[in-house]
Every structure is written in structure tokens, then in C-alpha cells.
Amino acid sequence: MSSRPQPGNGSAQFFIILIASTFLMGSSFVSGKILLAQGFPAMLLVGWRFLVAALATLPLVCFDNRSVMAALFPKGANLRDSALVLLIGLLQTTAVMGLLFVAMRSISASTAAILLFTNPIWVAVLGRLFLGESLHKARVAGLALGIVGVVLAIGIGGQGHASAGAITGELIGLVSALCWAAATIINKRANLPFRSWSLSFWQMLVGSLAVLAIAYASGEHWPAPTTHAQWGWFIWLAIPASTGSFGLWFVALNKGGATKTSGYLFLAPLFTVVLSYFVLGTSLSWVQAFGGILIGIALWLVNREMPARNEKERLNEALAEGEA
Image 1 (cartoon, helix red, strand yellow):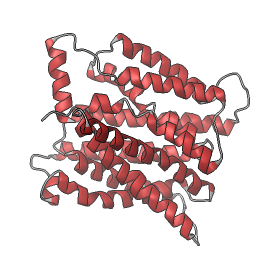
Image 2 (cartoon, one colour):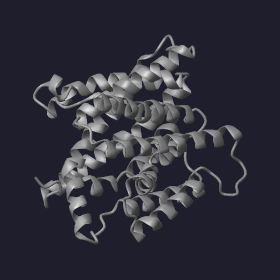
Image 3 (cartoon, one colour):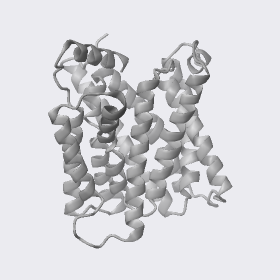
């Protein structure tokens, strides 16, 4: 079955799904920032968010297999596979989202989103180092632009106004993107027997339990009383902005293929910037905005489909698209 979007209505449907998915991704930064600003502890918020999101994913696991148990515990899964799922969960959820929400205590939602979604740039770098993946000239140019964009996006533009706390938050946000890239590379190399929804469930469950353990061990507690509005933001963060965005993203991957779909990730931080302006009343400086534009161009260059240079590359691309 082809994973490329079909002409006509299929292409329109693919684009609508992408817009919905990236919009929900972008909204998670805004809702998370609102709750952090109202006194919710970062690690506790991440832990409960992804525990609820993991449970909400269970019905969708049926898309991977008619039996939920067969999907969650596939035949052939061994101790190595379980250990790798545990590692991916700790990186993808515990490290990435835990660090991201810690970063958002001192930086804006827009900056956090721009930094996190530099992930495909670091995936390209790590893929070259650890997977031997080729870097075409366009990807090299994309990496160079991306690095410049990151420098501008985190405010190092000669303005001299960034506080020490903000710089620390920006560096933590960048580390969260690197952890996401590391989890992606491990997943690529692991060849796990789990399908998309099953792996998503396990990584969120494992990661959320680890974050909750850290949160309660460090003395964090849920604010009381919690208003109806706060519960509304939390439910939005946990289900539409987590389970919903991931679900639609997987649908987009199946329709458009991994290479084509990943090139649209830059829309998520764009939506965060727009929503932050209208909901939070914040904006980026022109230097940071220009950095974000450079990162968007870099993501397009890094992820755009390149013509295969030989038979082996054509075969690898076909296999990669088939797995999506």
C-alpha cells in the first residue's frame, strides 16, 4: 500500500490532518505555560499529563491489532525489546517533556516550542554519526541554517537583555530536543516488534510513572483548590494536545510518508507563536522571529525528499516509507 497522499481529496485531507495535528501540538505549549504560571509544579504536571494521555491511548491500540493484549505484548518481544522500550520512554517522555516544562518556567512558550522542534535537525546529525545516513548538500545547508536559527531564537543576538535564568531555560529546552533526537535514533536502530500506538502507549506510561516518582520524591504536590478553568486546561493538555495530536500525526505519517510529513513539523512552533500572542499576550523579538524562520527553512531542507543517488538508497527510502 502506498503511503503517499493521493491527488484531489486525499491531498486536501492529508493537509487538514497535518494542520489539526500541528495546531494541537502548538497548543500544548500554551496550555502548559498557563498552568505553570498558575503554580502547577513542572514535573508533576508532566507526569499526570502523560499518564492520562497513555490511558486515553489504550482504545487506539486496537488500530494496531484486534486484541489490545496482543498489541501491547507482541509475539517475539524479548528482554532486549522491553529494555529498549523502557529507555525510549525515559528519553521521550521523562527527559524530553520533563526538561521542556522545567525550561518553560523561565522562557516563553514560543521559544520553548522553537527549540524543541529543532529535533529533526539533531536527528539528521545523529543519524549521520550513528546510522551512517547520507547528508545531501541541501541537508548540510539546512543544518547550517538551523544552527544559526537556534542561536538567534534563544536570544543570543547582541541584545544583552537575557537573564541568567532565561539562558539556563533556553539551554534546558535545547537539551530536551537532543533527548528527543536520541530517542528517535534508538527507535530507528532497535527494530522493535511494537506497532506505533503500542509503542506510544508504553513510552508515555513508562515516562509518566518515572516523572511522577521524581515529582513526589522531590516534594511536589498538586495545587489545591484547582479551579474548573485549570482542570479544563489540564484536560486539554492531556487528551487533545497529547493523545489527539499524536494520533493525527500517526495518521498523517501513514497518508504522506515519513519524509514528506516530517517537513511540516515547523508548523507546530508557528501555531505556538500565534496562540501565545492571542492567548498569553506575548510575542517574539524580531531577532528571535527571524531565527524561527531560519529554523523552519532548515527543517524543510533537512526533511525534504531528495532523489536517491543509487539503487541502495532507493531501496532504503522505499523501506522507510513502507514502515511509516
